[in-house]
Image (cartoon, rainbow, N blue to C red; front, side):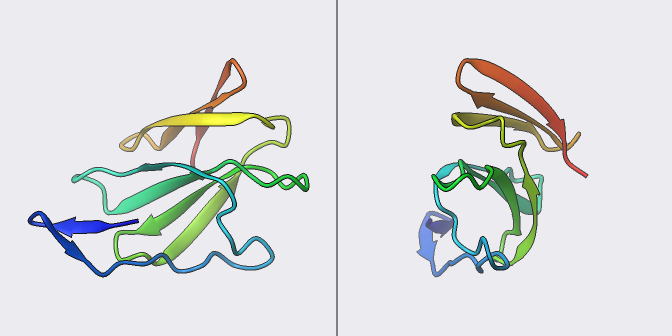
Length: 102
C-alpha cells in the first residue's frame, strides 16, 4: 500500500493484527475518505475455513480492530461502505449482505 501526501509518496506500513490471524490473507479492497480518520480493509479470508473480516486501521497504519464476517460468506468478492453510518455491504457470490460496524 502506498500513502501519498501532496502527490508525493510517503513511507507507510500497516501494523499486523493480533495473532492467530496476524496476516491479511486475501486483501480485496481498501476504503477510506478525506473526512474519515480510519481506513478499512476487506480480507476475503483464507482457505482453511477462517472467516473473512473487515480490518480497521488509523491512517498512520496502526491496527485498531477487526470485524469477523459469518463463515457462510465463503465467496467474498467486494465491499461498499457508508463511513458516516458505519455500514458495510459485502458481495459474496451473487448476494449482498448488510452489516453495521460497532
